[in-house]
Image (cartoon, rainbow, N blue to C red):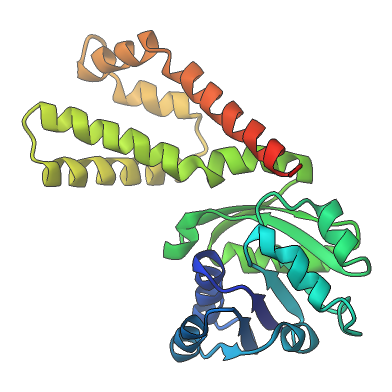
Length: 265
């Protein structure tokens, strides 16, 4: 089993660390973070040993780069002289930091760029990842295996990660916006806030699971639920007139465009 370390153990890094610990896939876990109480918490809950950045690099086979993007350059420069710098497989979850940028700071290392989302905190995350130029097939497979422990993971080309950022990175907020709109609509029909939330969330969760369980086109599911001149048909007609599909397309395009802009900063 690999020895795995984290440079940065905030919400996202900590959630991934927790998933790896629960899966018992690592021989040892190490964590480096500026906030000592966080390290104490991770040690108590997951037996992750506190360590310096240099110790993480020197001791670990896989290193997750999970600090804030604006702090990553200074961190990597602080350990640049380590003779072990190129030994680990690095998995970066720093938003907007491209492989070219990462490989310039880790010139001889294997680097994978990943884009997880907040649902990793409950084991239902979706992560897109792209291997760098020095990543072997076995290393890419290992990265995918580790990331999939937080939900699902899919290997893509780096140029597709802006779309991933828009769809699954920002997507939870868009989904939550739709759920809130459904709750608001239901309360206007007389349901309590609590009941409307329960109904809306379970409806979205159940629908997602039904769709995941079938290879049939989503359009077939919609058709199966819709009876001619029934309630679903009446509601769908309003959605069509409101150009919801086009609105969502523009929403994702705007998020992807902003992702590209941020990667240039």
